[in-house]
Structures are given as C-alpha cells and as structure tokens.
Length: 191
Image: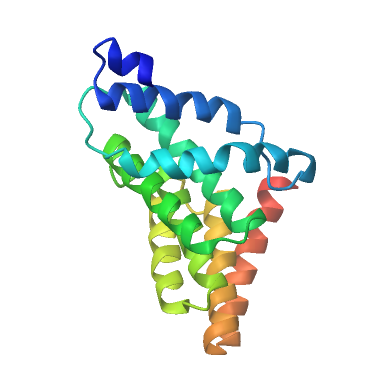
C-alpha cells in the first residue's frame, strides 16, 4: 500500500489492491473446516482494519475489485460470527458486503439475497426476531423473483423464516408451513 501511494496511486486503488489480495488469502477459510481457522485468525484483523475505509461508491475501483472486497467482507464476517464469536464485528462486515453488492449489482441479485440472509441470521442469533424476519423476507423475495419457487435459496429462506416463527413468536402452525415448503423444495432439488 505504501509503495503504491508513493508511486502516485490513489488511496482507493491502493486499498482496493490490499483488500483484493486479502480476498485471495481468505479464500482458504471455511467455517465448516476447523483446520482453516488459522487463515481467518491471520487475516481477519487486516480486513477489519482496511474495510471501513472502502466506500461502496469509491472512484477508481474496478467492478471486479468491488466484488472481491464484498466477498472478502462476507467471508471475514462469517469468521467473526462463527469462529471468533464477535457478532458486532461480523455485522459491520456483513453490512459492508451488502452495500458493495447493491452498488455493483443492484437490489435484485443472488449476492444481495445472501447478504440479507446472513445479516438476518446474525440478528436471529441475537434474539432480534423482527429484524431477522424482515431481512429473511427480503432474501426470499429476491430468490423467488430470480429463481422461481423451487430453488435452494428459496428453501433456505423458508427454513430460516420457520425458525424465526418457531423461536420468537410461538407460531408453530406458520413455522411448520415454512418448514414443509423448505423440505419439499430440498427433496425435489437434491433427490
């Protein structure tokens, strides 16, 4: 970064380069594989330090770099939520990922639906059920529009909404309807 700044590159270009490089390094991290947690521990603090300086409308960044940064923020947020148990840091990075995804793709894109789902799941884990339900509903609407009613993203949203209804509001009947929709889609898709 320092070399790039001294050579006349803009702050945005240099920062985008750093975040794109971190994206490559964090690609190895998988929250389902504890053997990769060292990668998250090694690079998450750098992402946390650099990402707040990246603005969604930053001039001079390629679309590819913006998407790499959005994916990096999302993956690092998963690390903070699932491994480091730092939900507030995860939320900041999930929101950064969402902002960048919307800036690049617009509101109706699978990455945006995934970002809404991830933030909603974080709210759900904090017991913020109305906020979680609102974002799961947004995720569902995007997936339905883009993929139709029989897609795994739709099943994911139905399942997550069922969990919110069941845990927060004691609405077992509504929860079961969503669980059944999710199961039917998954049986068709994965059978």
